[in-house]
Image 1 (cartoon, rainbow, N blue to C red):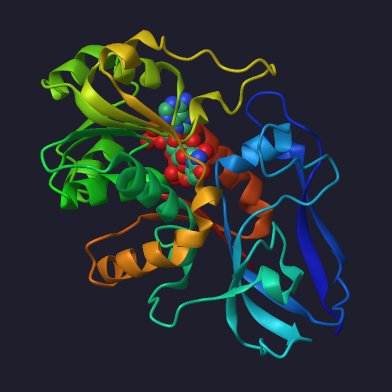
Image 2: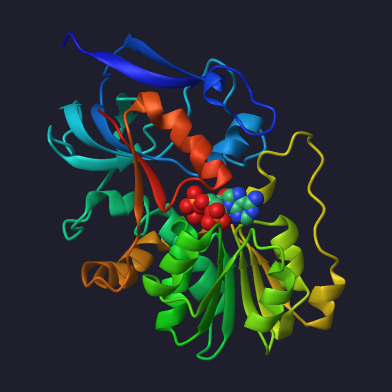
Length: 334
Ligand SMILES: NC(=O)c1ccc[n+]([C@@H]2O[C@H](COP(=O)([O-])OP(=O)(O)OC[C@H]3O[C@@H](n4cnc5c(N)ncnc54)[C@H](OP(=O)(O)O)[C@@H]3O)[C@@H](O)[C@H]2O)c1
């Protein structure tokens, strides 16, 4: 075909926050397309916090070693097919990795639902992050009208879905986000009742003031000091969804993070759920059917933070880790 692949590899395992020198962007030969396999030209790559765990060997999906391709979910177009279920030109979702081309088996590829108006939504609000928000909020926490729901990283991918769904269910939503611009967006665009800046020095007092009857649902995407603050303010019968620890992902050593005292959960008679989105893969279709009409009618939306070109993917990933991104981080592969 005369085409070459472009790939982003892990050059060196970072200690602490990565920098772009830990990654390398290289040209490689196109992989061979075997019997029953499909060649896909990746168009969109999703960047997600779990990738930091993969490169430090702390994520349940496995480890990326120096010299290896970074992993990730992609949307792409079938370029060549040796399988009757796929035709050149089909738009598909797969774990294509940080590269322009990938070769996959048919059982590793999903065709996009026809009624999706904006394909990248299948990597965000209608994809894995959206399913995470839906599973934790709807299936685990089971919000009731009037519940006070608190979520940090409120304008991130998972957080912004939680804020919008909780509001639509009649909850009072207190977001926490990094900076005035994000807080303004959480209130005016996502519908949060209040949004606190995680950098404000009086965050603890502000959270007390924002939740005068305590917190009924704390959806934890960040861990660390904010999990501690929220745990101290739980209402009786609270539900705590332990989902992510982004404040901890750049930890230098390998000792597990120290969490809040369980005494707060005992006093609140809280129910604490651990959430792993992979457990809900069989219910993905149910989630898509519930949320697709909301997305198509504009009732559920997502801000996108687009990075152009694989050569800029590492910088985009670092922005995601340190809070410099705003919205769902996607790489447009050129
Ligand atoms: N358990 C699961 O199956 C599962 C599935 C998907 C995602 N997750 C987790 O859910 C969390 C959110 O994922 P996402 O895809 O929504 O990420 P995202 O859109 O990339 O948002 C990440 C946001 O986290 C915030 N943040 C960064 N450092 C922080 C810190 N030290 N303290 C507090 N907030 C910090 C930043 O927002 P601000 O600057 O606005 O605070 C950043 O923009 C991550 O922890 C992720 O690992 C878990």
